[in-house]
Image 1: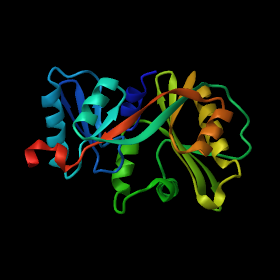
Image 2 (image 1 turned 90 degrees about the vertical axis):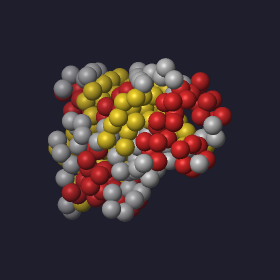
Image 3 (image 1 turned 180 degrees about the vertical axis):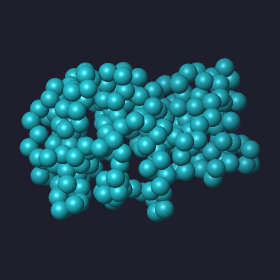
Image 4 (image 1 turned 45 degrees about the vertical axis):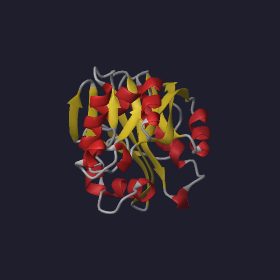
Length: 241
C-alpha cells in the first residue's frame, strides 16, 4: 500500500509545484500533510532538489518539511540538520460491515457544525479554518457525524480511492469521549464503503496516540507502514545565509 501516495491524493495541497520527481506542497501552513515535500521518486540532483524545496518554503515564510519514507533521504536530511518530526503510523483493514448503534449523518460536503467540531479538536491555528476546508474539499469525500441536539460531538471523513477508503479527521469532543461515538463513525463510513463496492480501508494515527490505536485495532485495523517528518530551520536554508 503506497501510503504517501494515498495521503497525497486524499489531503491535497492547493499550491503544488513539481521539481525533479518531488512535489512541493503548500496550503497556508495548516497541516504538515499539505505543507511538506512529497518525495515520490529519487531526484537526479539531490542537493539541488533540497535547495529548491528550502527556497520554496522560505518564500512562503515556512521551514522546509519533508514527509519521509526513504531511509537514504532520511539520513541525508539528518546530516543537513533537519530535526526529526513526529512519526505517523498507517493502519489498514479489509472492509466488513458491522452494526452501528446510533444514527450517523453522512454528507458529501462538510457542513458548518462538522467543521467546527473537527476544528475544536484538531485545529492548531486561528484564522486557518477556511484554508483547512479548502484542503478537505480538494478531494471527493464523505463527511460523517453523530449529532446530538444539533451538535456533532464525533466526526470523521472518508475518502474513496479506487478500491480502498481513506479514513481521516476522526475527532471526538472531550466531553463526549468514551461513549463509543468514534466507533460508530468508523462503522458508518465502512458500511458506506462496502455499499459502494470498496474492499479495504486505511487510516493514520500518530505514534503517541495509543488510545486511538487500540480502538482501530479492535475494528480490525493493523499496522501497514507509515512515515515521519523531517523539519528544517533557518540554518538549513542556504539562500538566507
